[in-house]
Every structure is written in structure tokens, then in C-alpha cells.
Length: 520
Image 1 (spheres, rainbow, N blue to C red):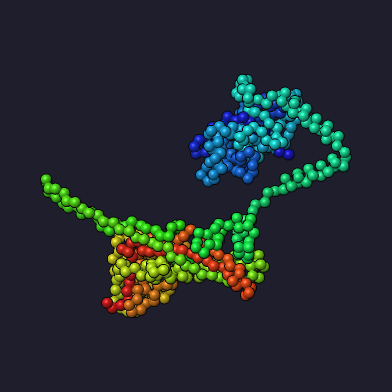
Image 2 (image 1 turned 60 degrees about the vertical axis):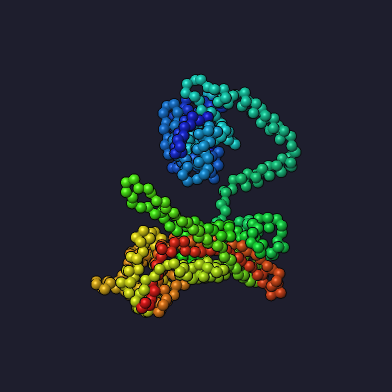
């Protein structure tokens, strides 16, 4: 059986969360006569620091224990860099809102003493808790004795209070004895049931257990606006003109992860989110005109001009038909089917637009930007190693050495590039990755495969190189879902409409350069 002793601690704490305090004073009995002998305390392998003996609220760890003939001193550290409850505990200790230390221990040896209590000659401390008030349910409470004999009255548990408490307990015991045997039996059975339930180990929520919002969303997919009002309250109303409800946060996150598979540019482009219909970025179009001047000459005025780049949001929409039997019997897998169908369709459409989009009702693709310059290969089908080198060094060093710099081409072009060799040494200019997770290199720069780029051909642009952080993708905050169980009801299906808004545009064309496979 474990016991807890709560002390009015002398505690100090640093901004880094290092905490120190006097946890117990030896040689003095507590208010009910209990004592702990010096040298009789051992500690568990790990002594956690918790709040109010809540095992689910571990905020630090005690690492040092020092004992002399007078007192037990403990030192530990709060996890202030890792969890918010630890930072809150630090502020409470600094503000002296938390002043108690409580030792939870397992007694091993104890004998009755002349003070009417017990003297423990062997205990194992398993937990030391930070307590706001020096009380704990079922624990024997004492206070820390100040060094010497002087004690503040507010720091003592007076004996008359203990006596009054014991008298009250005796009165309640006599009242219970007056109950009829059947009534007492029922009470004991109920108390036993409550105690059994309280002693059950707490179970953590399974990671894949659906939240209330996801459960309500699943019901909405099946019944549409006929969903009970109390479940609709758990959903977020969409601001989309088609109305409907926003998919739960878990589902929207899955869409972003799936889109990377079909739109690899997202892994290197600059991606932002917005709730506005468009985003505007100021752009400087010229610099000042400073001139060298002689003594006493007047300086000339310079004009610097600015422009604006606008990235509008474009709407991508589709719908998926799901059988009512699948929705009713899938046990939650219907949501996975919706994610898969929509992510494949949206992913392919977005990938094509980010690369080749015209900018009309869809994002502007970087291959459609007329301001990006190009290097001519000199042949319509055979790639030139020299021209690839020329293309690379046509870009300023600050751009080609940027973290977001990549070569981009499709799989067929990759196959041709991997066969290219240095004309002098005969070595391949392609460098395979030295270890798993690292990119393969072309002329020392990473390569990104994009299936939407064109093949090698006369007049085509099969290769582009540049700092892809200069391509900006802007998404609306959520995917809007509208469930329609009515229009296709005769076919036994529910139609699920999905709408997403996204935009894309090149912010700095000078950071890119293309290779044109042509003779001129």
C-alpha cells in the first residue's frame, strides 16, 4: 500500500525549469506522530515529477537526492522545452501558487512509537508531486518543519483539528451501523463496484479511433441534410457558394499528403494557404540610379519603380458516386475511398496545371511563363552535355546555389540524360545517390522527376532548371464537401461533390532556365 506525505516545501526554481526543495525533515514527528528515520529512504529507478499526483500529468523528473541528519533535499528538472503543462508548473512555482511537495512511497518497515504514530525504517519513494495545497485524498498529511523550533501557525496541522475530524468519522460510523442489513449490503456492493472501476488501469484512446467530428461527417455522407441536428453541430459550415460542410481536419490533411505523389513540385515549391480570393505580392521592377559625382556637384534624383504580382484562386471541382451499401456497411472505409478517388483526380489535374497551366481558369504553370529564358540544345533529339553545362552557368550563382534549386524532367528524358558522358574523361555526368534518402545529381545538382514535362523532340522544352522556391502555390484553407443523397437515390448511390481552390504562379522568372531541343 502506498502512502503520501505532503510538505510545505521550501522550493526554488530557475527560468530553465531546474527545481530544488526540502522534501522532508528528520527527527521530528508529524501531527499524528509518524516519523521517518534518516538513512531509511530509497528511491525507485525513475522518480517522476507530476502535478497533484496525476500520473497522466508528468511534468519533469527528479534526478538528485541529498540526505543529511536533518533533512531530505531533492533536485529535478521540468520539461519546459517539451510540454506546455511543464511551463505552466514553472510559472505556478515562481508565483508561489504551488508550494507543496508530496512524497508517494511504499513502506517496507514500520513500528509503533511513543508519539502514537509509526516510525518508518524502510520506505521506497516512487513519485514526488508538486501540489498547490498540502492535501491528498487518503494520504497522511504533515508539513515541513522550519529549521529550528519556530513554526508559523499557518504551516501546522493542529491536533484539535485532527481530533475533531476523528470525532466526526466516529459519528458517521455509528450512523452507518444503524442502517438495516439489506440496505448496508447494497451500499457495500455499490461502493465495491465503484472502487473496482476506479482501480482499472486507464486506457489510452486508440490512434485510429474516429473523433466526434469524423463520426458526424460519416453520418453526413450517408444522410446529407437529414443528418440529426446535434451531429451537424459538430461540422464546420463551408463558405463555398455551394454550401455544404468542410471535411474534418484529419481528412483534409490526408489530401495534402496524397497530392505530393501526383504533384512533385509541391515538395520544392513555396506553398501558402489563404482564405482570400487572391493574393498580391509587391515587386520591385527597377533599382535606384546612383552616379559617381565630382566635388561640389549636385546629386541627381533616382526613381525606383514597383509593381504587383497577383496569384488568383482558381476552382477545381469534381464529384464521386458511392453506393449506399458501401456507406452503410463499410465501417468507416468509405471515407478512405472518398479520399483516394478525390486525391487521384485532384492530384493529376493540379500537377498538370502547375507545370503547363495557362493561367486562365487554372494556375499558371512555370513552363507557360514567357519570361523564362532558354538555352538551345543545337540538336532536335540528341542532348548535348556542353549545352547542359551552359544552361546551368547561365543562371546567377546565387540562384543555382539556392536550397530549392533542381533539374526537372520526365522519366524518358531522365533515361537519356543518364547516358551522357563527359567528352574529355568519358565519365557519366549523372551521379547516383551515395546513400538512401539523398537525391541523385546531375552536374552536382539534385534532379526531380516530373511526369508532366514534355519528351525530347524538335522545338520542345524537355528540361528546366531553377530555384523552385520562386514558384508560389497558394491554397484555400479547406476542401469543401457537399453530400447529395437525393439526385441519384434511384440508382442507390450518394453523390459527393468536392471543391478546392488553388492558385500558382512564377514569382521570379530569372531563377529558372529551360533547355530547348532544336537546332536554332
